[in-house]
Image 1 (tube, rainbow, N blue to C red):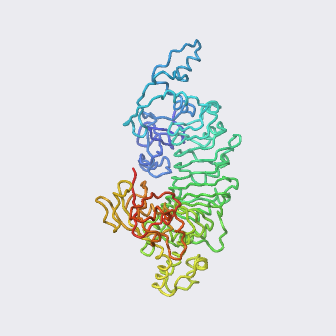
Image 2 (tube, rainbow, N blue to C red):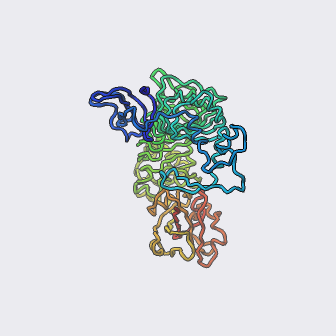
Image 3 (cartoon, rainbow, N blue to C red):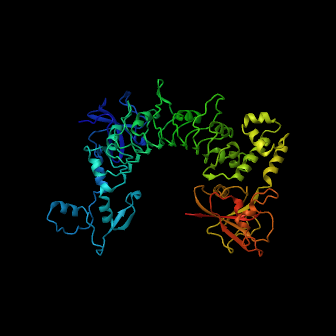
Length: 611
């Protein structure tokens, strides 16, 4: 008998969905038309010699296979997969002879429920590492104990059946009997055909809090799911990454997940979000009422305003992840546009092709209460213009007035003031000769910041540049940077005469930095300067020659500016004792600013990479 359309199958570990079953013109016998989960395995989109047999959600992901193909599987029930993974391996060494006269007791012993005496030597086993495809094995001791403990399925709290071929719920009530205490369940990459099957599984797991359904292909719903009959609904974390689930399906599955607070919908090829299921059916007011975090990374969203408007019905949304979409710019909201998502506190636009600074002013207009933002791996930071080279981070703080966390690094009060002053002077330099009112149209924070920090020099580009120098040049400190293979000592430090004078094999450079730069941003800046991978693990050491107390020129020692450098840890007698010895200190505390270590012009920052 041929499988029904919508049936899930596996062939040689490749998953697919049956979209057609029957004859194909010009061939003999019967065929299954399938759409592969991995589009690279497909050969067409459901048409053969001009005749269309089915449609694929992903172009080119379809092909025909024989229903008698070797290795074809339609999956197995949840309990069978659970038993096979967590209780299916009997001990590798012979079990102790049973002295029990009952078959039940003998069966218990044969399945490893009785641990060997503590004095008995435990057998070693060679276990292949899963990620090595059997090429690497490790020696392990005591795996029988692990198996016997895992075999107590009623004690399990966290279960992963990722890729285990689960296709059905099994006999009614069996899941509740086998594993009633599950809190976390991963059913990613399985053969589940529909949401109805998912609900049958969940209805037996009253304590479940987290569910992963990543990379499943569930048949689309035509009507809302019924609420899950659990006591009460507890699932707060739901992962639907890579399911190709349309946004319009979310209100239909929402009744089964009323307590969800974190929802992941990444890798679903979403190009836009729809506010409603149809023109006459608005987003239900009770759909995901508790949702606080939504992850939409690695989709194809192009418009931030349309995305925000689509999410407006979510009343308590606080975190929105839009990493790796295709947002190129952000327009200003219309003057009559109502405020939306005022509770949103964090937004990630990392790895989007954002390249214009006006988009940051527009973002501030859309989300004036935003506290955290990530724009790493965007053209804004990767390719700053010459006039922006001093600090793209400072410009971001100038454009966005409420940020307390930028690119994962806390924003200090001093750093914000520096950034806003830099932003003002940058406006004057970029737009010489324009009046304040005219500048305010393109830079909404102009009047606010001028009232806070004073009006920068007016009149010409040179006047603007001069004012910019007055604001920041006196605060910049030039430091030498060295990449070394191991932490610095007095014997291995490069001489303090300038870049390029270090010992053989040591890469050196120089860099101008604001004393208010936090350590996390500083580490990224140093890796860029030395042309090192930004994801590398790096330690940073401050190295300076001890000098007499009162010597000037330290980072943050702005004459008459009151930067707070005199309160830093570097103002101890040990750090400033005479004698010219090297003072070496590892930089720690991601929120600490550079001025915390009291470095002077010409001092060294040593970077050491770790594997």
